[in-house]
Length: 399
Image (cartoon, rainbow, N blue to C red; front, side, top):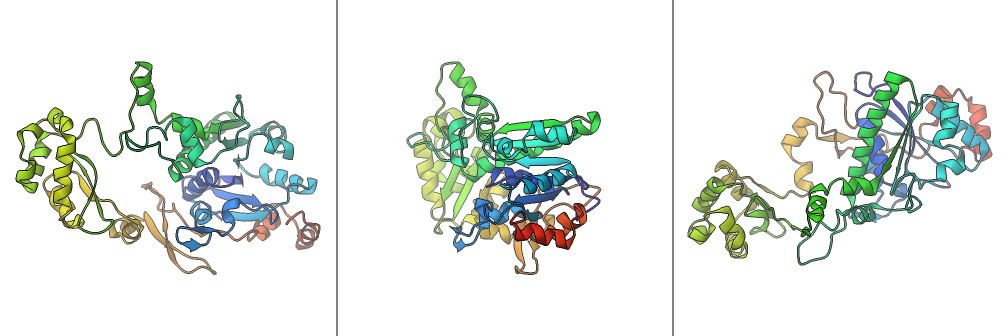
């Protein structure tokens, strides 16, 4: 079911992850060639599979985003026979991944110690809000809480405003850390033949991103929320242009780039008080007021090209339509068209990495229907006959 030349071809994952962070981890691994078998049930489907109003449509866009390439089977894990089937599936998988609150897998009889006794070389990923140990390990959490707990929310936003909730970036950051840790555990398992349990806390991923602020705090200095500003570059930010909701991102790194900007903007910025970085920082309000007034009369795309031609880092802050239609991203395979039998072709985000020895990475199939791959997983992989599967379905073990 996976391509043979992709970097993780041959790696199979028993995927018990839910919501976004854990599924994004296994989604990344499938883009590199791994085969991920997502375990759900009709009684307890992934919460993100359920259609809900988001991104302007009544459909599970959040589920689509992290579930392409995956296979789907149903197991009602309240039944011992379903747990036994899950055990059989785990035994033919290199990786087992879960993102429940600590204790859930143990109550199901699928915790690391139990699985290690069953499969001595298992690699298991447990991704949770606060980790598998410690006084806060029982807390549940979602993306905004990860950023709040980890301090990243405090560092996001403007100095005169509140902390800003970190949403998808927190789920995806946790998922990326989990994917890297899983690959590292797999590497070590293949060298040693020994089991490995990866315990990753999403709130600690957020804390890992604020090292500079912690250094300042340890020296007695409170770090301010920087907004779109930067300590080493002025101006640095996102500015409105002459079209509604069309914004230009701009950064000036040194005095040479500043002089180039003055040459384009003209007299309003040709002020001796702006000639040095220190001067620009001291008079940033006046500087940005003048720059904002100039950009408000300008076309975003034309201005970005003019600034780039002068060696000044600038670009339009793109919306999703820009990205979906970008010829560069499509040429690179970063945005691809995918479809299946029931869903028309539509753009999807491909794998960002390129490999010289294979082009078989990225999204190959769209989101699976609940239980659509049971003939392959239960039949071909686990050897259950159609009569056995029908019996298990009638008793709501496969459900």
